Length: 143
Image (cartoon, rainbow, N blue to C red; front, side, top):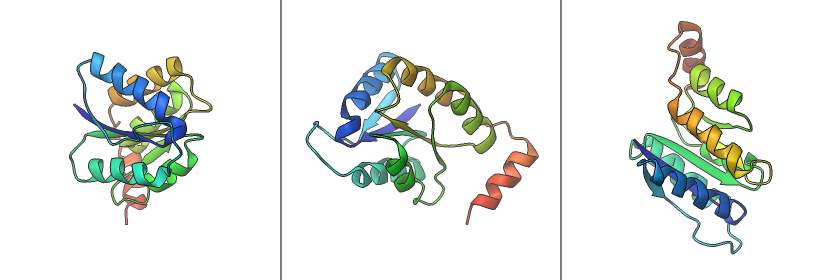
């Protein structure tokens, strides 16, 4: 499995912790930055992660900013990306099983590292349900 990850300065510390956690689990990671806690713009990194997933360079993506809101909006601008802002394991499970989300957004302000690890694990391990009603709804999202 190959995961793309990116954040702005507000998500820098959490991004690095998640990246290292994934590497410890022998999961390949493409780190699109940012590379420091110096102020930067979240759209840069949200776009890079989303494009990587949309182009099948990575299987799934993780994007992080202060709240997770802005960077999730950016990721969802990319065709074939379904990015969900997630703040619980249950939301991670539901967005994968119901929405077949391929990018998860986290808010560094609201997501301590221990919770982030649990969310990421559930997000990466949960398959899409393949239920007709969920596929039909996904098809209605796609343009």
